[in-house]
Length: 305
Picture 1 (cartoon, helix red, strand yellow):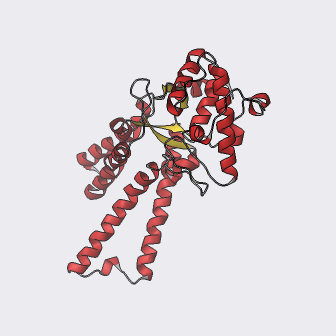
Picture 2 (cartoon, one colour):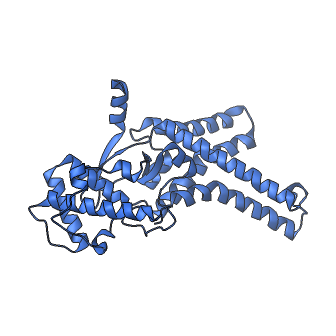
Picture 3 (tube, helix red, strand yellow):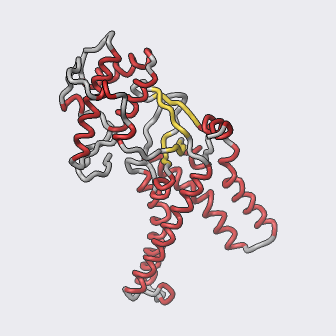
C-alpha cells in the first residue's frame, strides 16, 4: 500500500465509543464499494422479477390479458404490491438482519450501521432501516418515473435531470459519503471485512494457552458476550490503554455481576478473553455461533439476533 492509499484509508477511519465505554475504530465504505453493492442488489432483484414472470406464465397468468373486472383488478393490484415489496422489502428485510447488509453488500464486504450522535455508538433500529430505504424511491425511482412520463427535452426534463443528479452526487459532497437516506435515517455504511474467528483472534501463545488462569469464568458469565465483543476486547488488549482497560473491566464485571479484578484489570481481561474465546471456538466446532451480546446462540452455523 503506497502513501496515497494509506492517506485515503485514514480519511475514511472513524472512532466511536460503545455504551460499555469501548472505543472502536471503523472504516467507512468507499463510494465504489457502495455502487458495486447497489448494482449487485438490483441485478438480484431483476432476475427475481424474471422468475416471478416465468412463474406467472407457467401458471397461466397473462398480465396483458387480464380482464377488466374485479378479479382482474385484484390481480393487477396484487402484482403492483409484490413489485413494491420486492424493490423495498428486499433491502429492508436483509438490512434488519444481524449482518445489517443485503446480499450485494455482503459480497462487497460492507454493511449498514447506525451513525453515532457525537462519539457514542447507537444501535441500528428498524425505523432507521425503513426510512433510509423508502427515501431511495425519492432519490432514484421518482425521477426515473418522471423522465418516462414527460419524455426527453424541455424544461421539465432538465429539472428532472437536476433532481436526479443532486441525489446521485450527494455522497460526493460530504466527508462520510452519506446519501440523502443516510442523513434522514441517521445511518452510514461501513466496511465489514470477513474474517474467520480463529484468524482474527490471537493475543499470543502464552495468553491463549495459560494452564492456570488467575480468574475462572463459568458458562453463565461467558454466555453474555459473543464474537463481536471478543474482537472488541482483543483490540482493547492490543492497544493497552490503561483508561480503556479500566472502563472495559468495569463494564464486564457489571454485566456478569462480579466485583473482582480491580487494580488488576489487564490480567482479568486477558483471562476473560481466553475463556470467552475458548467457549466460542468450542461452540463453532458443533455449528453453534453467537454473533454478539444481543444474539441468541444459532445452532445452524448462521447468525441470529
